[in-house]
Amino acid sequence: MKTKATELSKELGVSFDSVMVTIKDRVQAAHVTGHGKNTWLTDEGVDTVMLAYEMPEATPKVHKARVKGNACNPNFVMAIIEGVEGKHPVAIRRRHRDRFLGKTIEVHAITDDKGTTYRHVELTGHNY
Image (cartoon, rainbow, N blue to C red; front, side, top):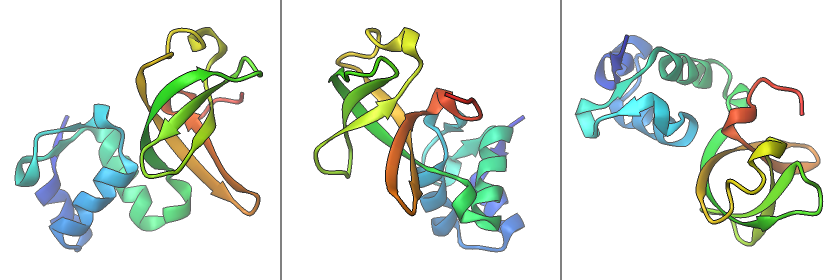
């Protein structure tokens, strides 16, 4: 079932623009359809937005990354991430190592006291 972003903003009691920024930064493209005031979210997308307002640290930012090559470790590829300067290692499933070369993928940015690391969105909830 899908929920309209305008209804979600009323339910949360925040402005529509604030909700749209959160959707753009935190929700995967697979869970969003439509544009502007006609934006719809899947149940998983709604859960992500709700969690982002309750605990912003619990929801990683979603970036688009262009895979440029393999890293020495087979669990990583080197990618150029939109909005971040330089090439960075991105954690992936080992079986996707050659499949992602030259492709654009979505990655989560995980920031802690040691810095920022990146992982493919498919790895969410998995130990790697």
